[in-house]
Image (cartoon, rainbow, N blue to C red; front, side, top):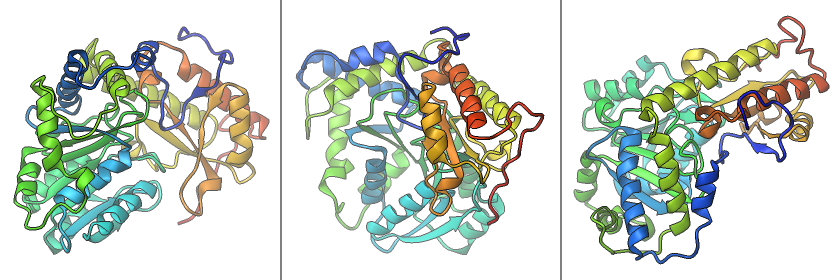
Length: 399
């Protein structure tokens, strides 16, 4: 499909904030015949995945853990391995998933301080600094993109504050809807953990939890005074397995998701070709700018309150009170685009979400043209005068 194509596609395009559209070569890699997890071909692919994930997040020494599961399994891995009961954790919550990560930390016994931002915004760094000065935290967590709002967390700024005010504190980044779309430089910024998953900007089918862990964080794990409470997320058991695949050896705790790892290796190859991550970041930024410009042309507002706090991987859009996602989304699907409704409690009926990460942003496939044309037509059919200068502006709810 060329970039100039804007007709209704032959099948609905999945343009939600994940799972994402995948390339044909990734789909082919996912459709390979049954392969033993001890097969040299698979062992080689698994080792390559670990190496390439380091490149994606910008680290030379951190350890990726590639385990069958979801992005939220990465929450459990992090909480179970790094947090002991009673330890303090500062959670920077910008929406539904920030609250979920806080709940997970509490499940594993953390004493959680939730620093919440107003809907569509992120915490001022001055508030984060104040919280870091108020008490000692084992970890601070930040959602680089909260998928519920499309708000971009300030990972670099948080890392700088931790370095200045509490250098022993671990910086944990929920990158599920961010990794491989938003700029992140693990080593240069001083990140300790990145949690992500295969089905977002990594461009692969769902099924793989990826957690990248600094040597500093692995040292914290080794100095625990209590056992890791969950067997299946115990990194001490998984570490020799990951390293054995890097060394092209055969050691395993559980059968890995063979075909999905083949697919991930293929998607990482495509991601890192033609300019590497800097090219990938720039492509997402260009695509995001197009989408945000279209939202403004429709006379609507993004949930994110300013460009500085807006994700490039996705966009959440406030709707006028006369339009609900329940009527808009079927009209989008009829035009070949699957979008997502809102998920914030109390506001889910007020906004919708578009995903524009992975090959939608990085390949010349026309998906963005189709998405924007379909959205404009669906909004107009729903009663919004999108062709009028400025249209009818949706008023975000009062907080």
